Amino acid sequence: MPGSTPAPSLASARLPLFPVTATVTEDRLTIAGCDLAELAQQWGTPLYLYDEATLVQAVQAYRQALKCHYPGPSGITYAGKAGLNLALAQWMAAQGVWLDCTGLGELHIASTARVPREQILVHGVNKTAQDLAAAVEMARVIVVDNLTELERLATLAQARSGPFPELWLRIRPGLAVETHAFRQTGQEDSKFGMSYPEALEAVRLCQAQGLPLTGLHFHQGSHFHDPTPLGPALDQALDFAQKAWREMGWRLAVICPGGGWGVPYHEDDLPHPSVASYVRFLAERLMAGCAARELPLPALHLEPGRSLVARAGVALYRVGAVKRTAHRRWILLDGGLADNPRPALYGARYSALPVAQPQRPPQGRAWLAGPYCESGDVLIEDLPMPELAPGELVAVPVSGAYHLSMGSNYNGARRPAVLWLAGGEARLIQRRESLDELVQRDLPLW
Image (cartoon, rainbow, N blue to C red; front, side):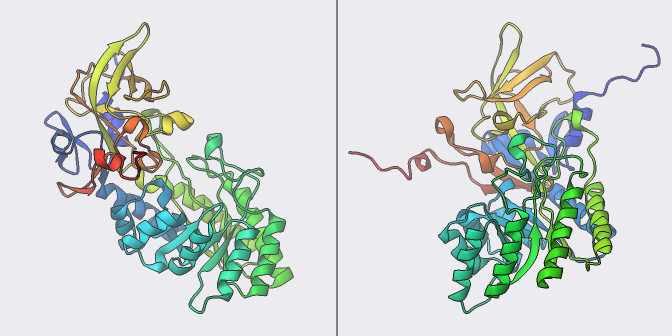
């Protein structure tokens, strides 16, 4: 129509989902000055990339928001479940970010990466005896999920002569954020945390045993976009802190309303509410709540995972075949369900760009699927895409969180290589799993 604004190209609409260093150079998609086609040629596909500049920007966004909006002490912990390897653990520690570890395996990664004890926090809904013993030795903070666990920690404390970690109680607010049911954690019937009566009993036990209880933690779910439901849960936590102070003299030193702030995965999700708006809401609600209850401001600690690393990551796949059924164009890739189970688990929605000539106009809609023997092995559904030929590369943005940590060896898939991109250089931080490693743990019958 005369005077109408032309529709943005696929590249201009989708580039904001990619790392901050992503550009189109000489008709090719590049990140941190690295040619993605050259990286795929050298390291193979599927291939995962992490852009350091995007990680830096994400950490700074949280730090600046906390500094601007909260006058009390504050800090951030990276939720290692979003994705953890030696390089990420080392990098977060070097930035002064704490590391949230769940279980002995993640603690071992942190130890191997030489993350200082002062920066390790331990979570877990059913920590084993080994988990707890390691946490006591290695962590600054243990977030206590239940009374049984607290009793076991009391026994460990009696036998220990050295320093004992701070304890935070995980409370269950009975309120969840708006997200997929599988990502909700704060509802009344959640497996996570203690009820308020249980938490009061936990305070009594800590005082009786001389355990260093300093904080409260709650988490209502992951990948939410509106912080409003956090308000009532925060109020409940402060009501609890006021009651514990009046009845038992216990003073709240730290409060952690978890993490879970969402990110845009698809161009339809843009623009996304900022980290600053999320932090501002929490800070203002906490300050008002403490003032109303005559409580001193506690330290405010946040546990982002996805919103620190998701945008920094990109997955590269190679097209193996293109075929058409009655109503669909299938672009078949060399990765999918085994390295990214999120679409199959809870309908996660993604976008993509071809690496070569990403400005090409779309030629209809396409379904991007992997090679695995599951009908649910579909990475992206109903996405406008140009015509692609076998051998072309496809880049899927916002791939830095929960892909590899939730991946598998399904159909004998080998876990992908991972590269760290910074200053025009790519560094291998996790090599591709070998065929021999697929059977390394197996023992033959004969």
